Length: 623
Image 1: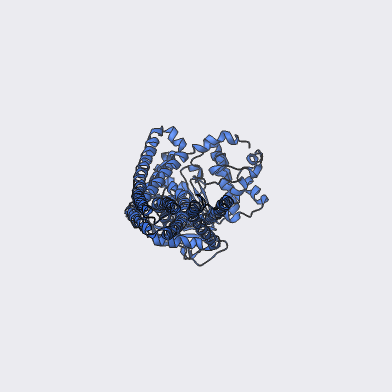
Image 2: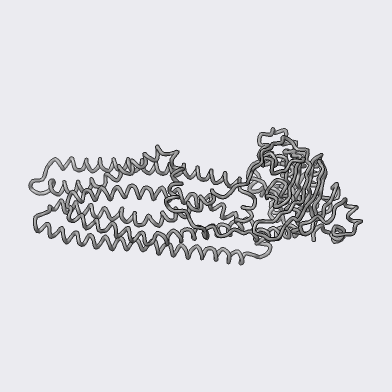
């Protein structure tokens, strides 16, 4: 059973869509819209103190290297006042008729030693802080991803994938990198300012009082922009997430964009998101840039006053040339760290906005699992007792009083119009969504009483929207709880899924990488690979969600043969649009507007002359 090569089949995999799938997606979209999330930045952000306290809980495990970095910052700052002190020493003792001849050798060595020490301290500071930053980044991402895989399905239907990815990739990195650089600036430059101020007081306390006036003025100027920068930073993060979402959709929906000539529409969407992001970036730039000239003007005023007073003191023989140059050098050296401290506020507010978004993500509720019972292997009996279900935020019920008994090993097909409740009913079995009213029992045990892991271990799922991973064929078959399966078991599952010849034609066999979501495989190959995964799991309950509706006839024959191998003694629910996939079912249920309106075999329902008969006569099993 040879097939076309991997490269030739890639186009089929890219355009694997049908009208029926679009209709089902439309129904899902309308349900999702009913409970779309409120903009997360409308909520009241956490305080800066709370965010810092929470961030430092992630720094605490790395406190030794963090402490080393802080010590290195202080030592780096302590070298700053030494330079103006050397200047005074050189000018007063090294020049003129009474100059000290030994300074010709000791002064250069002193300067070299000073900058060697400064280099060692700076390297230690940067290394330690970056090491802590990377460690915290790793810890936060691990916590976030752990939260991600435990979130309920409803979260993913309510939040764009691009926004979620931006949280885990961009926002968390902004937090750690920004705070590392902010911390260096705040600790090192604050120590530099204190050291230089101490030297200034030692040299001339009267002139130093001029410098003291500068600090509260700068603090007032910075504080005036803090709240605005925080709000703008939060808005910028939101629009960055929207831009990421547009790009992600353009990548994943590229075939649809091309076929339906949607390039111009997508360009307009991207341009709109980009322009909004640009507008906020411009406003942030204005707010941030204003701080620097304000600080510089204040500094210029202070310098001018100091020079005038120093010249007056010089005329009164109250200061030396060395003292004046040392004082002026130290004062000018203060302005650079003051400028850094003034500029750091914008970076700090962006970091706080990103941290607020990151911790909001971490605080999202995970799937509720109050179950306590564990079953090794279920028989597969399912019972629905007056089950009602409505999506969050919607007043309408998607399922309305479902009463259903499915015997172990029975194959039941679900058909009906799009939005009738077929997929919703199947999604309740693994508890993707909690039942609104009523209950579902597995072998007589309410599924809420079972641990989620134990319940889902009883279920295998094959969907039209196949989900494969950028890994080898073997690892996609032996996935999750079956990760330790032997090569013989994997090959047996591939053989049962009619993939042996195809895999044998690949240079690396079962160790071949299949690309993002199996992009290197055809639609039929991808579908059979998902069937092989279900075969290897060998769960007592199998859900087939339109597993063949998007395939061509040849691929469907292979997949149908693989499904026949799969349907051996398992309780099976089939959601289908094609008659060929359900004609062998033990029972067919027709759902309409969230209710079971007909039940029976294919022949019985055709003879009944109801909704199923009309759908069948029309050539499709959906309205």
